[in-house]
Amino acid sequence: MAAYCRVSTDQEEQLSSYENQVNYYTNYIMNHPNYELIGVYADEGITGTSTKKRENFKKMIADCEAGKIDRIIVKSISRFARNTLDCLNYVRRLKELGIGVTFEKENIDTLDAKGEVLLTILSSLAQDESRSISENSTWGIRKRFEQGHLHVNTTKFMGYDKDENGNLIINEEQAETVRLIYDKYLRGRNYFSIAKELNEAEIPGWNGEVKWIASTIEKMLHNEKYKGDALLQKTYTVDFLTKKRDKNNGQVAQYYVADSHPAIITPEVWEAVQLEEKRRKEFMKAHRIKAFSSNIGENPFASKVICGECGEAFGRKKWRPRLGEYRSVWQCNARYREKGVMGCANRHIDESTLEQVFIKSWNALMENKDACIKKWHQLQKGKNPLQAYRAEKLLEYADKEVLTFDAEQMHVTLECIVIYETEKISVRYLDGTIVELK
Image 1: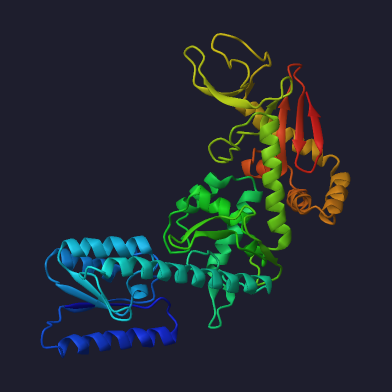
Image 2 (image 1 turned 90 degrees about the vertical axis):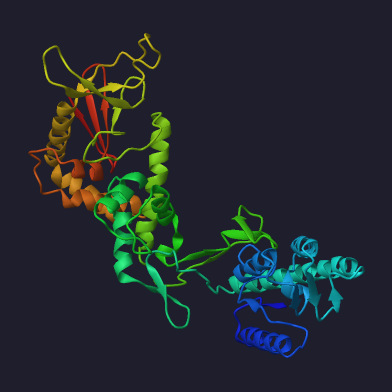
């Protein structure tokens, strides 16, 4: 004889019930002259609507199949399973093995001829009870959301812990990494290059492991909780039985709570990141760029060189003249889109020339430094947080004459270099300033 016990929550009164069930069945079986105790199988604090995560339940079934158990006793159908299909499947599976289940509360013996009919009816009622409990629980959660009460799982949430009262508090060590990610994005990196740089620097994630991927960076840059706000009910439970959750695209109400907890990122920086992402998407669409590249170390001009004739981006090529060394050149991607057919006739340009173009354009900009500084100060005071950020970075370089190419400076200040067939070159900075070169 074996007994199965389960409680549906981790509340204190339920845990007491759990201990009582274990003690009761241990004594009941051991004191019965016709029973030999094989064990009490118990799952603590796990929902009964599915058997997928109930480890001791699955162990008990395995012991039944191994011939270790002849009969199971359980308090009620709702303790065995609240899912009708699961309940009936396991009862029939055990019945084929000659193993009966006794449900004390309902006084059902599954080996009895009438047992399965009663079991079908009562297990359906148990499933409906589970649905009702789930709906009541969901109603309570949504009412708390309406009142602005925040519930966040910090297990996989980089930058925050919880205090003894369950309130979010900043984890300063992790928060530095969060701020670094936002800064890198605004300095021109994309999701992939940020993840690569964090891995190369061996900076740990939320679990202490160095395993950054682009999708993690993307989610962090979109998470409003880093600026101290919270959008509640981003996902919702689709099925109370499977507990499957799905993205909330308007199926249920969402609630936005401002200043709900301490911020790691200022609202201005957070908003600047959202505006920068929008700018990049529009830029990519306008110039038929499939992916915004920002490999500053190896390929600094990717997504930065645009054809002034057809509007498409230039791509990097490796050329080698006869008996010469390889050199990097940039050519319009529309030039040979179809094999053997020349499209855009715009000229190519050497990468070394592009470096000199940036140096020359910056120094030309600094010839009008006073006017530039005045403009940048005005942008700093404006209402657009992205423009204010750009102006701040431009001001950091305002007193520096550029003698050698600096890829980092170019990415934080430059939008693009436009190449024309007439040999005119237009250098566009991120503050809207344009420098024309020949």
